[in-house]
Length: 374
View 1 (cartoon, rainbow, N blue to C red):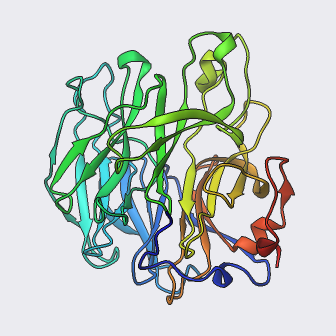
View 2 (cartoon, rainbow, N blue to C red; view 1 turned 90 degrees about the vertical axis):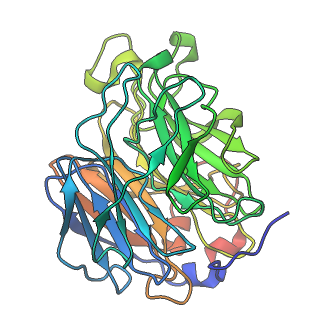
């Protein structure tokens, strides 16, 4: 049964005249996460060597100066606590070691929508096989809204190298002081995940896949799984019909990061806060070869069952991406925010509405509802 949650607004706010704008946001950094605070402040986080943030109070039209938060590599999973309004921003002092070795991490928390940040300690549990998950790299985290897990903080995480590496999630029921670990996704060779909560309380986990057992198992489509218990366990694992897991190159020889014929790419995923609807937006490269180019957004109008439309955002070199959506009754209302890397170094922020996306190219996977084409 679909729930009605605080923060969900009307469909009309995401429609209207089609609109897209793109602006440069960061220079010489990597690993993007974008989130929208409860008051509508858009907060973009980044970090290949230095953890940095920028914020916009006018819906993404203008931005404050960049704020230096700490040193290290952005660990992803930037999370807004819907209960307190705090924003969590993780880093790894260096690239996490492999082979199941514990990965040091830092946590910074902002009580004021990204104006200031304070380092905070937290307790992290081991997974069921005794490994401390690394947090690098993932799409932003979420606050769950459906009972019985309302208020839970949930973000993707991973374990490196053991069984070719595997994705899982960490979650907190005490406002981020203690982090428990979910079961692993039941597929090895996964990493760099995304999570969204659907309107019926299920959690959709979208995962990059970097390793396959043999040529016959090799897939270019994005992997996903479902949780029915607030992100503790994952099942119903399948590959999307329409969504690519980054560039679609497959072959016998190694090609840099594309060894094993395919290597996927960190993607963006968000559910739009529309009352009693499950409109999802996904972002990744849409490229038949091996290059990381053609940053594209896809839309689903049925909670990820089908993805009938896509639209090119940036035809140039582009890589990791992150998505979030505006809040009802704030300057961010009606906007979809896509933060993505450009391969020359640095990153951009695209801002568009659902009307712009719905008028894109049809994929053949389902149909676009009439109400999205108004």
